Amino acid sequence: MKNHKWQISSAGYSLVEVTLALLVVAIGLTATFALFPEGLRVTRAAVDNTEIAMFSEYVFTTLDLTAGYHGGDYKVGWDIDDTDDFISLMLSTKADAENFQLKDGKTVQTFYWIPDFYGLYSGNFAGTDMDSQEFEKIDFWTSAFTYTLDIAKKGIGGVPAYAVLKVWPGETKGDDEDARVFYREILPIR
Amino acid sequence: MRSQRSAVILLRQGGGGQGGQLGKGRTSCRAEGSQYPISNNQYPMSKGWIRTCRGFTLIEVLASMAVLVLLVLALTRMFGEAANITNRGTTMLMRNSAGSTALETLLQDAESMMVNERLACYVEADVTDPNGFGFDDVWFISTSGDQDDHMPYEYNHFFVTNRIATNAMGAAYMRFDLMKARMIFAVGDNNGFYALDPNFVDWWKHAMTSGANWDLQTLAEHVVRFDIYCTGWDGKGWMAGTGTGAHVFDSTLGPSGKPGLQGVPPAAFDIYMQLTSPEAALEGGMALVPDVPDEVQTKAREMMIRESSSLFGRAVPLTGAAQYNRVTRLGTNSTSYYWD
Image (cartoon, rainbow over all chains, first blue to last red):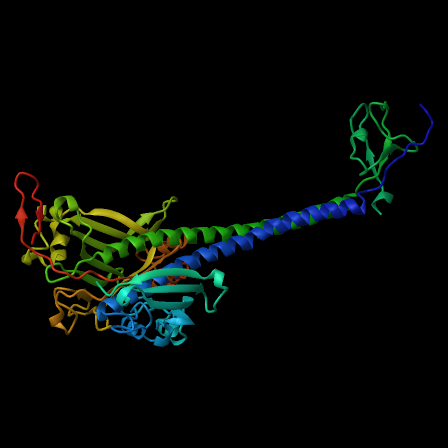
């Protein structure tokens, strides 16, 4: 057995090693946690898209209905204010009608969906903490849509008119590129 | 600090493979008083030595395990919550998707609804679960019938069932499903009613009692709201109370107080649906079986509503003339059709 000194390493991990290891762990955790808000955002966007699609159908059908009832060209036989006659009864009759009135032009509007909470035609159910009277007092809305509605005439004689609806989820207008854009030709025929 | 500490371990006698396999840099074990590192291959131990081995103390190991356990618990909890939220989001998306499909089907049929003096529709509020969710019942004729029979019309009945079902564990719960029932005119004719015959204008009354087989389809599960709103051409609601306490729209009678509007379709036919999650439907539905106290049922309904997604749509029924001349084709089935 030779008598020489062995180089014995008794040190632990160096600071650099520990730092690198922590860095790897931190990157992994950050990447993992970053997935959760992204997942929530995608889910929220999907729900928004569903609601906005329903809202756009409601708007266009109401325009169809108004044009069909009054007949004639847009701005001649009927106008956007005529849609007030056909505000859905799904919406609370106790809430201010301004929440539900459609406005055209390119100005930004907000539509508050304040449903008829278990009123006359929707069951006799009246929960303890969902009292319909209380909901109606505070104008409790389940969805809000910010939109611009542009109606213009098209073709010879202005028939049909066409409507372009841009909708953003929520109470405020988002970026232009975030708008969901819908198009429909409005025929005064049923 | 750790390198200055040492732990004393007893190595087993003989050629046990401990010392030489220690991790690089973690610990360094040597025989007591020896400058040589332990390596069983090079230095087989013939007698029990007491070795000093640099390593973690028991306290250090316990402390690190405690930290590890806390970390794992926290992460597990966080991942559990995240998985729960993700799961809820996923089921909500699936619910919205199924609800959208159901609503689309209903709206498509309602858009092709035909109402005039010969083809009638009937809507009654709060037919199913009247003291609870109050699901509506709607009967109408659409133009989505069998074109091969030269009869484009079809009977439609949309309603919500309430029945006691059992879950996988055998527990009973009240279940609400939105159903679509359809029947072509030929089948109705074979069962004794024909809507275009003036004697059967209120065809739904005959359809209820005829025993005819409907083509049934479940449109949506776990419904907590199914309401129909008939908006008239005057912008008012055309559903009104009757002497029996029911709220109805019967196109053969016209809206209440306006008999001149018999046979006129409503201007708009609005549909409001809410679907709850399967979990809420199951949990809440268990409280809705008979003999459960009212306050418990109320809480259960509230919970089911809070977990629900809303879907709404508007359809504009068709107007137009329809003939009721009846021709029976002999030699084939008794298919009837209109002509003009």
